[in-house]
Image (cartoon, rainbow, N blue to C red):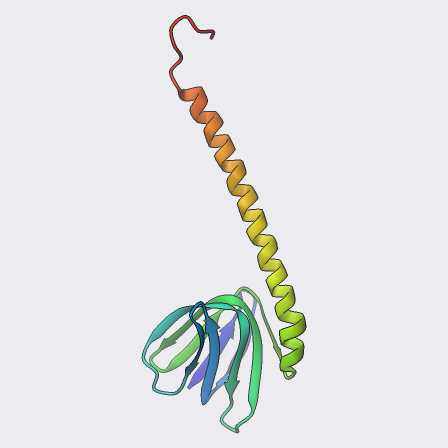
Length: 135
C-alpha cells in the first residue's frame, strides 16, 4: 500500500508499505493492506512501517492527521523526522515535539485570556449607563 508523509514544507516519505503502526488518542493501532477508509488525528508519536523487503522504518510526527483512502495511507503533520534509531527518535525528537506542543498550549491560553479581557472591556463600554451618570 502506498504511504506518504508530508509536512507543510516537504514530502518526507513516499514509498510502499506492507503494514503500519501509529498512535492516536485511543492508543496504538495498525493498518494493513485492504484496510477500510479511515481518518484519525495522530498524537505526537513515532509512526512505524514495514517496507516490502521487510525492513522497519520510523518517523517521528508532531501530531497531524492520518487517512486511509482507496488503499493509500497519507499522513499530514506539522513536523516529521525520519530515522533508523527508534530510541533516539523517542528520546530526543519526541521530547522536543512535546515541549513545543506544551509551549503552544501555554501561548494559546494566554492569547485567549487577552481576547476575553478585551471583549469584557468592550462590552462594559457598550453597556447603557444610568441617567445622570458621567459621560
